[in-house]
Length: 284
Length: 279
Image (cartoon, rainbow over the protein chains, first blue to last red):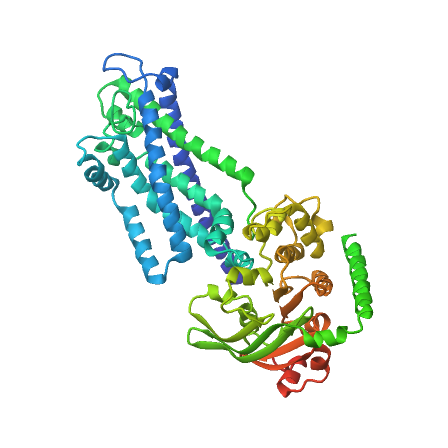
């Protein structure tokens, strides 16, 4: 009787272990399939010209997406400039100061904002920064992406600040530190690793957004000097090139995808390494 | 090795202390005269719930006063009113008088108060910074602009930690053992040279050997510091304190010299508690 039960329990254990293992393996497989496919297809059409030249007209071979790479970087820079400080500070407010009812309202609104379709954010940025001045611009694109950065940064900041033990806050306050000083010199540094990871994730997410750029940054086949003109961006280029009818453009779309992936990965790795050197081991 | 040098330090300090006492025949009178904290008719409320009831207590200068009592009797709450740490909790209220060297602390600038009244917590809570930066923290936030190195060294020496960490000052404080972390927290509190050190069950997370070190340390610090310690450990109160206050249900039941309170308690409830009949 008991041995039957034991065999049953062991087989349930084995089945469950296998199921979770297969699921985990599947996730990793999908990631590597995507990566491999990009490297295979994009790598072939990736060359030096891709990084240094402007797009060429249809039928003319060669050319690159230098303007789109710079455009994407400029858009990300603006998104970071607009979204990260707002998200960070609101997250600090929520975790350290917010009263119960008000904090609930902010948190709920943030989650809603996070769930708003990106194309709606694009329309919002359009009505705010394109319609009044009557032309598309890098600025409008950056604004749209910046708005999308806020909720993820905010929630990451809040979560990681809440994970900092209260005893650290008490320790600093018992030495006479004011509340903001405690937050700035003890609590935020203790949570810095997690918060920066959250920020990078939010930037990585918006780096690939196409919809909010369609009617803000618009796209451009030439260089876009300054901030007030339409600009090319890698996701826009991928969109335009991938739905075209030309094999040459398809190959360049793959290459653009690979470059976009590489930019996100490199930024992530770089930040992690910089943090790893400076970061402290966590207590318990 | 480290433990041995600790022991030597302690004996030297004890000798020095005894010599000092011997040199001053008036020491016995002084202890009666000088009161650091004078608490009168103190009531404390968490919202509508009262946690401390009409408490009167004098904490003498350069002595260790132990607060004992069962869990939830309000001893930690009371200790935390002395540097107004309870203000960080919402909906709390203090009614009564607390005088530090004759000045009311309730309308004192809280930064100044906490500089004069340091605190060590139940669990070691070093900041996620280097050992050096932990000790220097209080000095920096108080705008101290002198040579930090000397003061950091001095504070670590006062906390009997210097010998163990002098070659690792810039390593993370988390690399230290629990007992070392707690002594680091004491060094951090001592760096701003407080007149009073509040210790909220400082040894409850430590093993007996480390506990003995902290008690030795308290003995050495008595020369320069007044201490109030909350403890669940009655042996610790008996060993390490000069005066003991027994609290029950938010009220101060009995307060006396430690030797008297533990040998001839006046109140039957005190006797029941210290003989282990409840709590």
